[in-house]
Image (cartoon, rainbow, N blue to C red; front, side):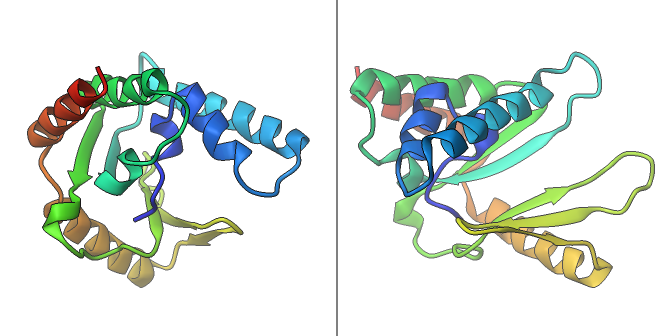
Length: 168
């Protein structure tokens, strides 16, 4: 699991802080920011909005960036998104120890109309696409283990609310 929040759940200040780290050019950062904002619109569709199941780590919420208001707004945004019918948000707490899938960001996409699923593995250098059925099934099993190791949606929302209150 990565130590950053999924792009679909990031606020603008979080994106800006995240994209400003590293060695990329300002032009690249601006293109990446615009692309990420466009991708987020997919969850706002009135019809045929995809379902997002996201598991985040508590560590991703602990970094100092921006000011307390920015961090509080990011947590509030996660809480708001977690209440949407097409978003399931789960949290892996630090206190729960090591868990499967800690080294790779796994995105599994399922498409309508019987099209086969596809796995995207992301890191700082590249995105790898995997569509071989046996490999997709293996990543499905890993993601299921990650999901089961995390807090459920209601407990995740409670935890987010507690974190928000620490920033008030």
